Length: 478
Ligand code: FAD
Ligand code: MLT
Ligand code: ZN
Image (tube, rainbow, N blue to C red; front, side):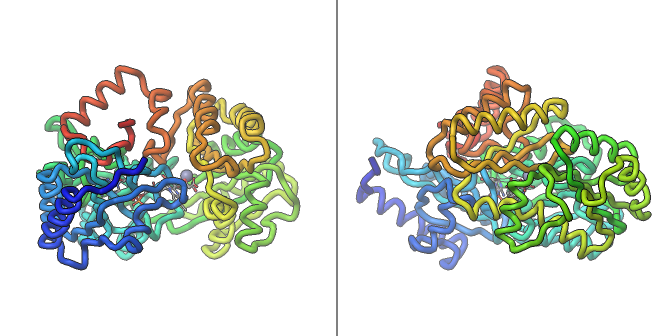
């Protein structure tokens, strides 16, 4: 049952709001229900929960003062960047906690939005690095790098909204992991604010720095449970302007893996290898009003992208010839517009799935050798546990990462989630490849982490956030 606000809670909330206004200015404390609503629901629409107010600091000093104020009032804080996360980690828990003796402890959390931490530093050309605020979007970071003839190596379809802080907090993967690694590999150092307002900063850009625990890397993948990341120093890489993309129609996941193996061995500069299936392609075509990319229909599609300073096309063509594919099984693009056209069939899966209904999104990795078996097993499982539902599979086949999307079961029915994640664990996979655990999977973390690992993780959480006020219910069940 929802808690009835008590007068003491109301007056304490008003006092906190006033205090926060003096820190960030009136315009950046949002407590109007309509304005708050957009922050209280996640991108998928599956996860939502109330916050008492939204606060939008602009500087690290403001974040520190906000956190100190919330600490002194015993308030929980939920951290939100671009709100493109897909596991409910950036939105509050579904309902207000039950009333307790301490009205502040049971009050809805403060939601700290990082989007105004949007400062972009100069590119350090000598080091190929840049320091950016946590609220800078991926797209702005990519543009800043490109203006200096460099590239930020991580890319994903939510680039216009996803923030650097959110991507670090989730250790985002994306489209180029097989070449450059995930977000973790790009982070040289971070600046962050702890739950009590303490600032820790490691932005000097030293690539070699063996002076004890790597606190920056500890925050990568911490999903907002340890600190608010306020800025980051990240690496940039040399531009690879010559690009070729091939979309290949195939009969099975096993043949896609064989084709990928040939491309890995034979083609220069492989930087993306993605998979999707006919039913997902049909959904995207319908949603985005696109034609068929190939002249024939195929059950499975493999998209590969190679890039280099020297044109990698010939090496990819040679592999395609060796694969002896029928003429109606390939489309190739060597120019930017053509490449973007082929990529749209893959990148637009997320929005096309959401257009059908609120999806259960299960982002998993399997050992490469078990991916084909998993594909058949998960189809059978979904047919049994959620008959009549729509199953759309796609993902980053180069990393063994499949996105299992199911539309049909009600959002709060978790039987399917549990069954799929148990299947993944039984096949030596991980229940989260790149989206994180968030609220969506916290009850199943034990499927991928041993009791001793969980004990160490909980000890770290207690040491850094002793009162458990940062993102309660995310990563660990409360
Ligand atoms: P939010 O959604 O706001 O937050 C995500 C988590 O990070 C929450 O737990 C939040 O509390 C925490 N957090 C946010 N900012 C901070 C901060 N400054 N300090 C501490 N904690 C913080 N993900 C992939 O990995 N690969 C993909 O290919 C990919 N493609 C996507 C495509 C689409 C269309 C969409 C909608 C999402 C996609 N995602 C993908 C998921 C999402 O974009 C990433 O998880 C991204 O890293 C989230 O960034 P955000 O700023 O939106 O974070
Ligand atoms: C993707 O690879 O497109 C993303 O991770 C988003 C999703 O899983 O829907
Ligand atoms: Zn993905």
